[in-house]
Amino acid sequence: MQRPPRGVSGVYDPGMKISMLAFLVVAGSGVAGASAQPAAAPGASADRPNIVFIMADDHAYQAISAYGSNRNVTPNIDRIAQAGMRFDRAFVTNSICAPSRAVILTGLLSHLNGVLTNGETFDPEMTTFPELLTEAGYSTAMIGKWHLRSTPRGFEHYEVLIGQGPYYNPPMIRDGQRVEHSGYTTDIITDLAIEWLREGRDEGKPFLLMAQHKAPHRNWQPGPEHINDYDGVVLPEPASLFDDWADNASPARQQEMTIAKHLTEHDLKLTTPGRLSEEQREVWDAAYDEKNQAFAEAGLTGDELVRWKYQRYAKDYLRSVQSVDDSVGRLLDELEALGLADNTIVIYTSDQGWYLGEHGWYDKRWMYEESFRTPLLVRWPGVVAPGSVNMDLVQNLDFAPTLLDAAGAKTPGRMQGVSMVSLLKGQTPIDWRQSVYYHYYENPGSHNVAKHEGVRTATHKLISFYETGEWELYDLIADPGEMQNLYGNAGTEGITEQLKGELEFLRAKYAVTD
Ligand SMILES: [Ca+2]
Image (cartoon, rainbow, N blue to C red; front, side, top):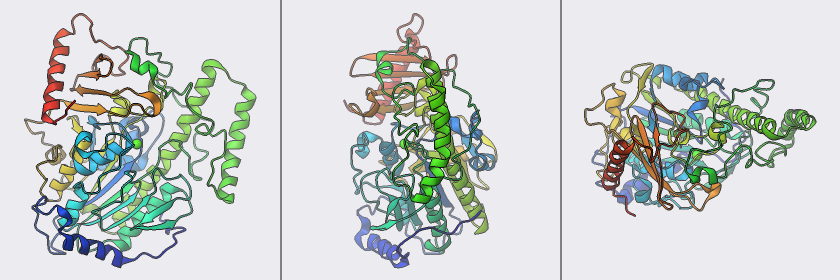
């Protein structure tokens, strides 16, 4: 179903796009030489693929049916997996929103791109892959959640949420001008992306469209079309919903992200969100007044209350995901309708993973699998074998070099990621990495997660909570849920030394300093 753009005030100005590009050319953009791709003549680009990069915020792979979700069905996201490649060992380098976005744009780890936590402003002078694609002759747009405090640069066109942005009626910044929208934010981002595909892009060029959702970020406000999904359903609980962390080092026990204790009334929808129009509020209250009355009458306590909170939280999260899935379907349909699907790479990913009740948690940040991993699905007709699955170790660090490579543009030598194009072709290079590096920095910070770094191989994970000298070691084959910290146990000396050596190797390779 295609919907017209809704509630847009302000008129789209194609001149803005052209003048922005002209500025980049005239100014030399400060990174001339970083891209060796000579400026292609407009229209001389039929062989270069278009790129649609769709990123959700905090979308757990556990909430995608292509990844085997036992809790929801995402038929449209699954279309990308069915026609393309599913990466089962895709990881982030720092599992939190703004830092992940900076890594994706720059191909540099946090300590080199400057965004260590959500508190830093992204340096607008940093070289980014969209900027390099613009220079290489791509028509480029960034629509949706930016969340880097800076003004987007290097795109022909942008329209972004302000900060986190609300779930309903978001003001946005369109090429420097504030515009007001009414409606559900996931739908609005989709409308704007489709509008740009139809009318905004330069049709003489290949294009990069980054469509980045706010959903399903906290506090998981469903859209009107899915607000009553899962009513009457009892979602399966993760096996570790009541994890007490008895076997783990103290950092995990000191966090503040439990479903049991740390969700607020606002998170649990016991209060009505602000910002809703009268009409939206009617829909909202009609849905939640009924749900909340049943809860009040039940008078739950103890584990039963935790179970109720899990159901409420997970259902709202999945309702929010469902609108993202609708959005993916609309974008895929639009590519078909415009005759672009056959020469367009479509990527679906998230800025990191998420706990959907595993270990009793919501949120992210940890190097444990649910937040360290991120969904990554790539469709590239004629290049990627439909329905393929990749088990190589890849990271969001690799996205920039991959997309530059796919576009035939040169990757700056400073970028630390590696192009995944050969993986997409089904060919793993013999020297592909055997381990990945992780580093989380935001402490003190929300949810009280200690700083940590670590290394993961195909079979094991070693984590260093270096401020307190605590370590954790997991055997991911025997214990994929990471319920048993093996560090210091007899018989693990060899693997521990091996992983410590690997961690030092990666620190040196990536120029990580103390
Ligand atoms: Ca996020």
